Length: 159
Ligand code: ADP
Image (cartoon, rainbow, N blue to C red):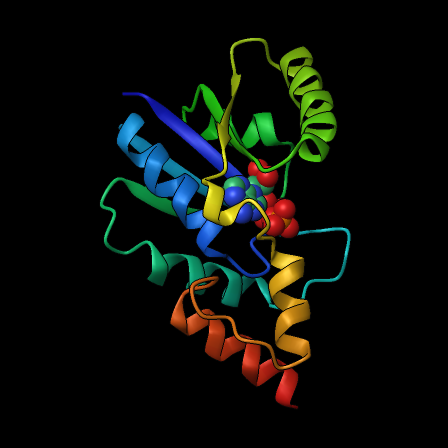
């Protein structure tokens, strides 16, 4: 079985994340989406909401599972028998940080390979922080996030 983990904070999941996961699901027998429990910046959405949004948006992919994690990424990968960590790259600015993380993870466990997938052109400018900012100021989120996430964002900013 070729198993990969795809980690992130997914606060919230965007169509850019979904594009990477859908493409990874064609390359691997199983993709485990790892939703980070503790993220440094305080998240807008609870862990439960972040998992629910991801689960509903990915329900059509039978070889994709959503799990939360609160440990080293290589440990999370080992627990799921994964030998690949998938990372999405949008711009050169993503590269520097991801390159460092990949080297560190290789040092921690040389049997786990980080695989980079380039963002599709239509999602290169998309990030979770950008969609939160657009929602905060009442901008249009169509095509950027799944409908349930759009509703969730509108609710959180209408309070
Ligand atoms: P963000 O960087 O949007 O806050 P995460 O921390 O949840 O999101 O990122 C999880 C992974 O998804 C990272 O590998 C990140 O580079 C990747 N990613 C985020 N947005 C996109 C996108 N629009 N296209 C491709 N990959 C993306």
